[in-house]
Length: 218
Image (cartoon, rainbow, N blue to C red):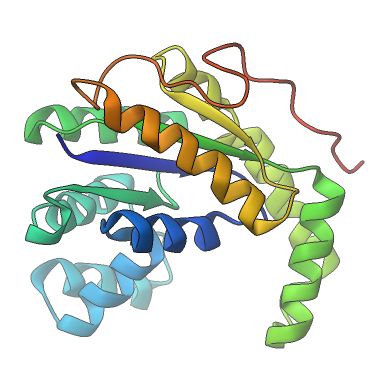
């Protein structure tokens, strides 16, 4: 059975880093929402042209179009053994739309990793990244707004997927190798199940309630 993974967590939690390591270790592609948009536009596909039209108008890509793009990406042969989705969904409405599409194509998430990190650490990581990459628009106010948006819109997805029995909370404020070791343990357990796309997965806390969110910036 394919190993389908979703990564949740605020910016600065290390989702992209861990997604690349999972991809390299298990041979499944990292499906990042932003990369899907760039690839489709660059390829000039019908979906890519629709995305380009949205960008040219200065609008946001609709949930329906994003789900279409993900459906198209998951139809490619390299996702046959699984995939790691990162960057979508970000809201409960998007998660419901994704679930509907998954039902149509016979997919579901076997493991949902919730990378958890205190806001002050996420803030400092994002500030440092902005300085290193010269992102002038990543001001302190913009970073704080992103974290606030995550807590308001995306964090509820942890509970959304927890009740489905496949959330694994992971402390993301540790060394990269320590975080990956915990992820590997959960993936090994998932691989031993007869059907990876159903049933609980145990992480460091087992299949228990997700711990309260770490302290947030005021």
